[in-house]
Image 1 (cartoon, rainbow over the protein chains, first blue to last red):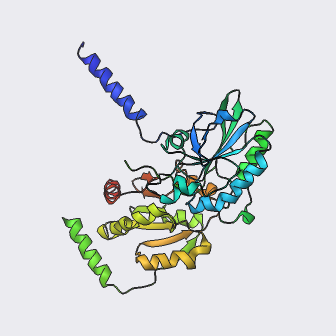
Image 2: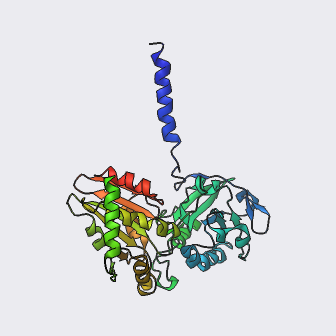
Image 3: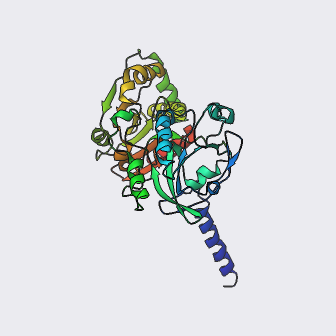
Length: 202
Length: 161
């Protein structure tokens, strides 16, 4: 028995680790506390969520230069910042793609963009992994709670990627209307097609 | 050895076959669902892709190979393009023709993925490529929200056969 117990403990530990070491944890769910990050903006400065003390929250978008869906949504992401930055929810765009896989998403290529909001490079891809981002664009609304930020919405921008004029449901704007009113979003999680994040090759 | 022979034979037949214009049907979600929910013992390999998706384009030959390798088994490969329907003539049909795709290709014309993604698989977040292997008789299913290598795809399919 004395020999069996450590063995059992070991088996149990191995069993546990096989769960915890599963690749790509599911990332954040609505209601989770979002970890802050420190990523390099295209102007060379480091940006963290904590930097902007007046922000009531953020609209964090994992996006990139090259994905046709990211390109289709670029002007709509700019519009989200124009609408919600004055209301305390600026956009923070993060490019998680490995430039070794997609040269068009290199830091230099990112610098061709001129946005009124930060466009950060997630060089280690750790932020995308922590958030559970899988595609571009993939959007997260964060709401301030004291010094923390809580995930309030995850998902799509609207229901028609091809043509903004044909959009019937503006998912993120509907969620933002409720979040700004201090209420939880009725539809707080939506799905969208996008380009898979180009992870570093192991 | 047998699968290799079958493949060589299959590809030989393919190259000998006259070029023909592969049809690409534009369908809505209920019709797509019907394609792989028949209560038969066929194993469906359903790959969601798009002409603009580089990893999808890279893995497409693996699905074509599966089709020839398992031509004698009850395996049905269905390639579901998520290109916009407006790109059918300009992009999708020329692509299918140029690549000589022989598996059935359909274009899913649904503007809002939030309506249907979850019905394919609750865990699918929407990244492409995405592959579903399903057998309705044995009620087995496997899903992959990632690019698959030939080895990975074959190994996944073998579990169904």
